[in-house]
Amino acid sequence: MTETITSRVLAELQQQIESYSPTIQQQDVGYVLEAGDGIARVSGLSEARNAELVQFVNGSLGTVFNLEQDNVGVIIMGAYEAIEEGSIVRSTGRIAEVPVGPTLMGRVVNALGQPVDGKGPIASTETRPIERIAAGVVRRKDVDRPLETGLKSIDSMIPIGRGQRELIIGDRQTGKTAIAVDSMINQKGKDCICIYVAIGQKKAAIARAVATLEEHGAMEHSIVVVASADDPAAMQYIAPYAGCAMGEYFMENGQDALVVYDDLSKHAWAYRQVSLLLRRPPGREAYPGDVFYLHSRLLERAVQLCDEYVISATEDTSTEKGVDGKIYAGPLAEHDANQAMDKMDNKSDLNLVKLSNSGGSLTALPIIETLLGDVSAYIPTNVISITDGQIYLENDLFYSGIRPAVNVGISVSRVGGAAQTKAMRQVAGRLRLDMASFSELAAFAQFGSDLDKATQAQLERGKRLQEILKQSQYEPMSLSDQVILIYAGVNGYADEIALERMQEWELALLRSMATSHPHLATGIVESGSITDDIETELKSALDTFNTSWS
Image: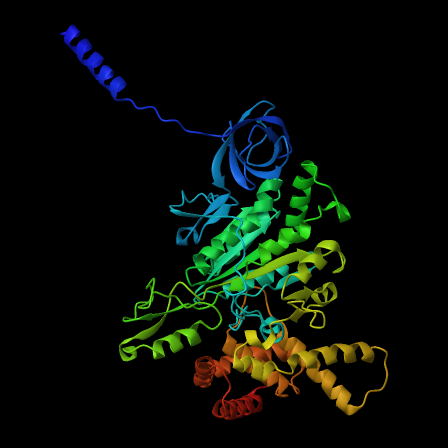
């Protein structure tokens, strides 16, 4: 019996040996020359590419950062304490990438896309490289759709459009993150996916931001990418690129995405750290010479893509090609497609179809921290030069109780009215000038000079407009409510209201409009403007309210 079993096992082994077909797998293998502080110099990886992933013997991944004549500089994205001189390093053949897709929504992940929220693994089947070339000029479309933040002072005077790059800048503790979180909360139900990238923040602060998003139901449409203060500089360096790659997935599937980079000052610090460790030549303030390129290649990826059209016999928006085998893209895509369809014999049986995976956008809200309000420092000026405007938050305004503490005189949106609905343009057209004039008059009035009645009236209206523009944290306001309040303010309906009762008046006015005149708000939203009929009824409603309110 034993002999029978032994012979059977030997026969099976013999069969496996005979059927074995060896395969040769080529792999680049090197060894560590030196390691420490999150970086390593590796010799032997002759075929390594820039941004390629390599793996150390302890399982940690690294990204090729420097390509030198006889070695490569690698930034280690994980535990580096156990990596020693002489350790084996293997190339993976993959460029640094992260998982993408809807399975990430509602999750908190690290810069590699790995979950850190304790909710189990993420079943993502797609990945994207963290670094990609930004969309070319022909693929871009003018910013023409608003990304409403829900903040009166921003939506009315410094509007943000979908596909825009708007900088939020100011000193510590002036409400920069609050504006970004408010904007994310306000995207609920508006088909806009939000990605919050926390760079170099304390874990406690990140936990508070996540808790706020969960409390207001914003995590359902959000992804949080974490590279905290105690993470390696390498993780802080790649975090914003990882968040951008996640947002690009949704953009290239025809959706809108918003990415918040909080903040790029600490990102620049992390880049400076790894650059100095890898002995890159230091320049101004010890930053390497390519620090401008660091942020420009990130922020240039924010874009609103052109719509793409096909000529189809059906109305299927997922059609890959039209009946003529073409996809019409670019700024004149619709015009060109219509012209081509007019020349076809059976044009009555054809449809011009907009592809569902086109026309998406990626909006960037980078945050920069200043020191004592100095916007002329190296990193702030760099980022200002590559964004479409900035929202400047001022210490004095913040500590005087004006929230959000937006300095209207310095803040700017280069997109302007193109990123506003017609209704908001109608009511806020002169608001910015009125507030700028009010600031100058208020400064002049401090000298105690006698003022004429017209100037006094302008000052009093400015004070009330300032009160209207104040807004509590994490309480974004609908477009219709903003329009009604600003209309009332700029047209003098609040001129006789005592300053200390302005908040009470606002709440009562909105409550009255919601209960007695709900069709006004509906009409503003549906038409996107204040029509003559709406304005007539709005004036009557405001007169009636002011008469009855006390």
